[in-house]
Length: 277
Image (cartoon, rainbow, N blue to C red):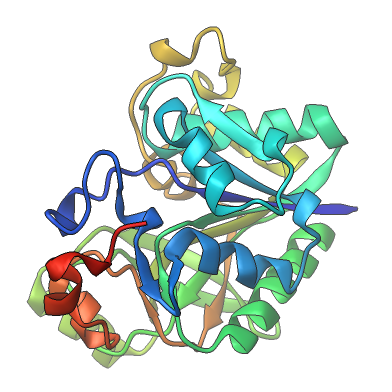
């Protein structure tokens, strides 16, 4: 079955202002190796997929900017959202669009604006997620091995093993209190929700029809009527067919100046003006 991927690049990056802006949000900032976070995400995917199988989901405002940052990707692979409606409608529209374009396929969704340290391990885990999603009727997510009781991330409670390193997800918990986050770390069967998903288009459609039937009807023409809701709330927390693979690699959503400093970014230097495209 054909493998495809979609990089989610429609965010406004409001938590990193004034480093980011409406015109130049976080995914376009050149924070590592002189490359933007979007470019780094694309390069990681290119280790597993050809450029023509990689897509970007963004809003019309950033479509041309995405094409400029990714000149090796076919320009028609930029999929634009008709309005801002959070990740559930965006991911649903992309999944259905790809199914129409290339037929039934297995698709991965990844945020454009995250930092990943051990890229070799990341590619191995993503390849494993693709393989499991291809063979099983499951929505697969990559859970990040937690290194601290961070209250800014969502958590996955991990259940029994399904197939070796693939585990059932018992429950999603959004941004817990510090006390609960500390409990999760002590328990040992929790992972951070990194917002990376892999599924077959047919499995996604079936599960979305069961959990959020109104979003399963999404098209370009009715997009603005869709509820603004995340994919976690609309689908992942409601489905009983969610599996995870733990990713043991350095990861951060670099969603704050403190997070940037933790992964070695010279924040003061960037605020001096070197972070722009």
